[in-house]
Image (cartoon, rainbow, N blue to C red; front, top):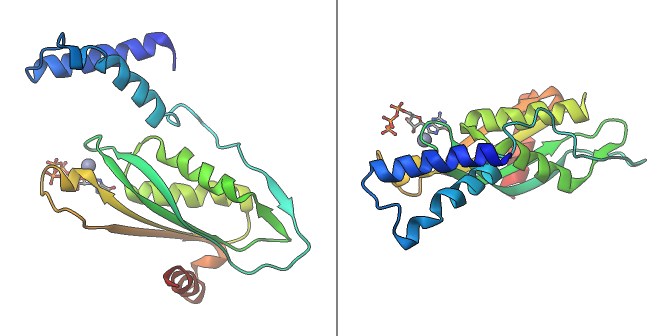
Length: 187
Ligand SMILES: Nc1nc2c(ncn2[C@@H]2O[C@H](COP(=O)(O)OP(=O)(O)OP(=O)(O)O)[C@@H](O)[C@H]2O)c(=O)[nH]1
Ligand SMILES: [Zn+2]
């Protein structure tokens, strides 16, 4: 993010702090607006990225069934309140013609999708869409489990409730494949 953009966030944070009645000159808050600006640059790093390109494909000569990467941790920000929602993403895919993806790249893709304001349902389907572009025409299954700070520390204040979302594409859309994915996640 450019210095001018960081400065804009800094001023906005200053305004918020002043408006809620804080003394922005007190030592504990002196650096806070600049710190928050750097933090937003980090946690919203994907907003200005238009494409996920950081992946590698490999060719294997083995026949592989469903490949599952379970419980990749993620942190994102709810677009309604700008509070964190966080949890895990589990991804399943069926390699086509021996084409597999580097495992760490699935986790990088999760970060790419998470580092922006979002809602859990969209985060879930975006992971499917992005993986589909890379792995097409194999099937994709994604399950996301998350807790939402906007439901816990404010508003309805229900601590510990977990939201589970799922999205599927291609060969993993049919009921048998979906249930195999879900059964294997439960193991
Ligand atoms: N479906 C979905 N809803 C979300 C997500 N994150 C936050 N929300 C909901 O977005 C809704 C926003 O509702 P509003 O009535 O506009 O906002 P609000 O007055 O702050 O609502 P409360 O949270 O009920 O106090 C709330 O019901 C949140 O729980 C998400 O990832 N998915
Ligand atoms: Zn929210």
